[in-house]
Image (cartoon, rainbow, N blue to C red; front, side):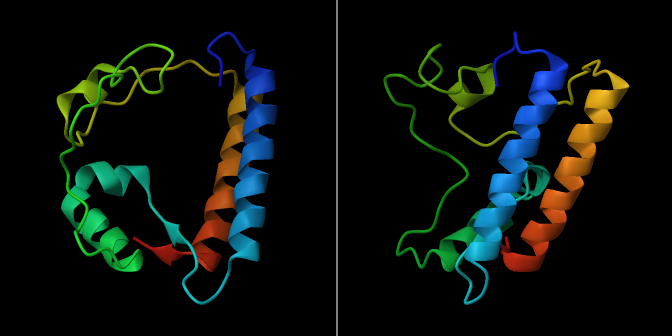
Amino acid sequence: MSPRMAWSQRSTTMSRQTSYLSDCAESLSGANRSILIDYDRLVSESANVLAKLSEFLELDVPLATTYRKQRFTGKIGMGDFSKNISLGRIVNTKDHDVCIPAPAYEKANACYAACIATLKKHCADA
C-alpha cells in the first residue's frame, strides 16, 4: 500500500485483500494444499517455520534462514528496500509506533481477525 494513501482507503484495501486471502484458503481447503506462515513466528522461530515449510513443499534442499543478496536487493522501486533485507538473513525487528485513527484500526483489525480465523481453519500450520 502506498504511504500516501488515506487511512480509510488503506482499511478498505486491507478488507479486499483479506477477503481475497480467505476466499483462496477456502478454495484450496483440504489435502494440505496451502500453508499458513505467521510473520511473528517466522522471525522468532525461523528455523522451525522454514523446516515445516520445506517439508510441506517437499523440497530436496531445505530453506535456510540466510539468503544471497541479489543485484537489486534493497533498491527502492525493486521490492523491499528496508535495511533488514540487505542483511542476508531473517531478523526480528522492533515494532514501529504508528498512529492509526480508531475507525480505520477497528475495521482493519476486524478484517485481520476474520481472515486469520479462516486461514487457520483451511491451511496447514507452519
